[in-house]
Length: 222
Image 1 (cartoon, rainbow, N blue to C red):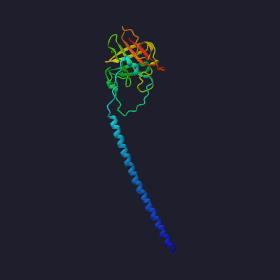
Image 2 (image 1 turned 135 degrees about the vertical axis):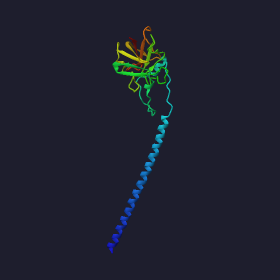
Image 3 (image 1 turned 180 degrees about the horizontal axis):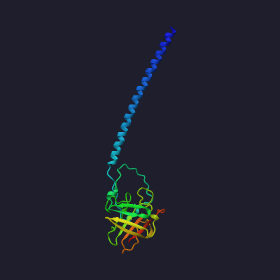
């Protein structure tokens, strides 16, 4: 009789355990499904936000005149802005290239009136520049120094007198040599010291290690 009662208790206990395990499995499956549903909803919301941001109109940056060039060229540009906008292929807007073999620099430039003619995107042609095909004109280009992705002029400090600089414009290559290098205070304008009887290229950037001055490179066509 005792053995019979003991066997019944064991069966009841096993039955309860089986039911409990079954409930755990069902509950686990239910919660997993709910978790995936929540994740799916969050992903959909995140995707919608990304699409919405990507479709925002692109900011148009105003062009700077030469008198305000110091407000544009800032020492040590630091990349802090995170953007989800599509990457723009500026090369299709280029009308020419600046090339400096000594520092392995080759960078395109746009038309002077292009919205992409801006130091925060490219090297910038500064008004009142004259293109290289204009005799006795002065082609003025400004660019960032520093360590950001747009610091195209970061190695200009390595250049010296008689170093060669090339401008390719409308399929024609123009060769220049650096004839003068000097610094100027950041006081609201840029003093360009050149021979107006010679076709000139002027490069402007911030002075390495000095936030109070800018460095000007006067290049004469040869």
